[in-house]
Length: 258
Ligand code: DAK
Image (tube, rainbow, N blue to C red; front, side, top):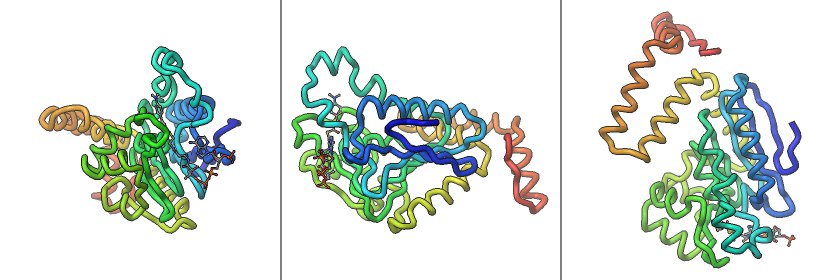
């Protein structure tokens, strides 16, 4: 599978998608976002893939939306043209786990894309920021919504209004990333984590992802009801029979195809 702005690597049941526009700091443009949507949908539908890793290079995850591409956009190009909405948010439709791995800069739209992943792992070189105000716009892909829900209102306001970047350690302290590794080890560690998830039942992983995401869209009572339906339905699956039998028989479970 060949893309102009992405690199694809297969690691067993894990596929790695790398954003790849090195000359423009992986700035996100229409072609890259169209390709990303295409790749994500293909791997989500591919039974040989259980987990998707989204990353950039060692230097940059993505330095935001492509400023050169959008500098001359008009209101008509963006609102009727559905800029962002038309191709940036395919990732939100992916049902398998998507792990974001950030090394170097994740700025503006790059930080927003990272926040659309299900889990974030960072290299100690990572820097997160929402500097849109400096180029005269508000964030347009969830920066004012996902950031405060993740790190809290006051930290988010600080980042959004002052353009201050936070490093990996601060991002971990504030719950934006779950784990930080030295830059030269981050992909190895991230692949180990992704492979451990890929060894579980893909359908259970998908149900957990769906339930956690539900928590951000509904009340606690409704969210727990939603979770409970998956839990009850789980007793009709091969994954539950295999997982619990394996525990009782003191052997490793085999969730292949379950
Ligand atoms: N877009 C286009 N090109 C970029 C870029 C970007 N976001 N970021 C970097 N580049 C390009 C640079 O122009 C430079 O190109 P050449 O001059 O070599 O041709 C090359 O990448 C290397 O960049 P630097 O020379 O600047 O490299 P440094 O290491 O010195 O600095 C940096 C790295 C990441 C700190 C710096 O490049 C930087 O500050 N970049 C801009 C970061 C930024 O402001 N990001 C936010 C972009 S605004 C909307 C919805 C969403 C959005 C907007 C509207 N609507 C619904 C309407 C989202 C907006 C954004 O994301």
